[in-house]
Length: 92
Length: 131
Ligand SMILES: [Zn+2]
Image (tube, rainbow over all chains, first blue to last red; front, top):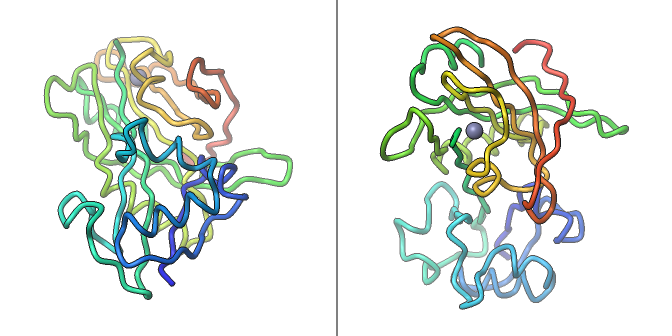
């Protein structure tokens, strides 16, 4: 089963886990399985239209899925998905 | 961290803080990883971390049994406050060090943490032995 690595700010919404196995053969399916087990994660990953929030990046192994096939990217059982929060800011 | 802040002046610098969390929840930063400012535009008052740098930092943290504790960035010729822009583009839980750099030299620094809804931030204490 693919493994999803959870960044620290989202662990309280994921039963305290740093890594969770979730089934699926595409990124979308794996994330759907993840959020059905941990519904509290949903609002942190997806906007009201069900799209991935712009503050959330998903890596399949070493690659940002934005540069692959986005959420339709195929996932193998041995793959790892990493959730990477976007961080920015400024003095003004 | 402070060298990076001076070197990037008059642009904002940014980077990632790795470290450990004690059982009493004290956070100790052991490594500050300087990163390129990925903001497309005037970097004198904006910064953005490249998600790839964060991905690599998360991996580095895992291999060293550390945690990504948060991030640092500089405010050139400004005080070290947590601005509305900083708050809107931050995440809860993480520690954020803001470094004031004046005329290219370190002036002062403060650490902040955003609340769960990112509606406000609070100053916090961080241990940074080798900053
Ligand atoms: Zn700032």
